[in-house]
Length: 384
Image (cartoon, helix red, strand yellow):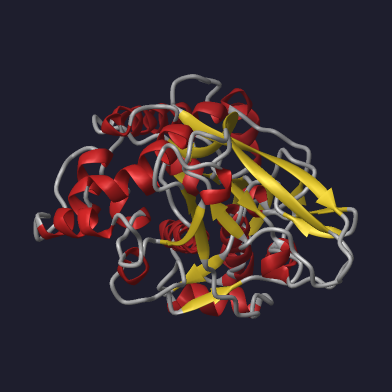
């Protein structure tokens, strides 16, 4: 499609997170007339960082950018995300239910066999590992992970964390996302991610997403839903939806979501480089505490300031942070039904992209790759 022809096509994008911003950038660059509609007063979605008493922190949890996708890497570095960061996570565990708080141990996440060998429970763990299948098996999350690391490590690192995070027994959850989120390591690789590129901006991700949207028309404080279909049809030649489809369709309760609330507190420090927790993210699997982890973003920003913010990640909030993938796949089917219903309601082409709209458990780089794909589809379908 020529740029002159593309200029005649109007593309509406619902949502100004990574997916909406990337699609908006690309389609604008290709000559389409784009408008991004965002219900919040700011862009960036869940990845956005905020400031508390001068300290950068993350109100929606830790967001470290990592990718092995060369096209995605080129895109984000072109918009200023270039500062390398190697993300390492710790987990606080109690080897015995009788241990008091002073006996908590900090171990690497994912679990490292070399570290586990130093523990008094190693003989039990070693016997369990020797009996594991050559490849993990099981259709539910618990069975799959136990077949990966044995019951002792599962109980230590996973069982109670999973119950707190998802509010349900791990046997009800799908094993499909386990390979992406759980691992037992034997190579002494302490960094959480194995991707080729990994970054964290000194001020979080805000400036990068704002750069992506530079020159792209964005309308803030504007929520659009299926009830606005007639107006959207007259305003645009096609629509990209990155919002949750139950929310967009006015069918709250159709899909299960698991949200978090970050309870954040500012602390004064004596030194400019001082932090209060052992790592940027410390997992807390024990039910002794109601939260799943602590997040102290100053570890990642290396901000030089007399103060820090420590956040406790409390699960069970009403926000749409995580799709709930049960082993029966019922929510994925419901999302597909909502998508079909929305498409049928419109007379213009409708596209879905990103974590919320496609009901997938994906990272930031995957959201960008999703946006690149949908933008290419839009251009192709209009003759580009």
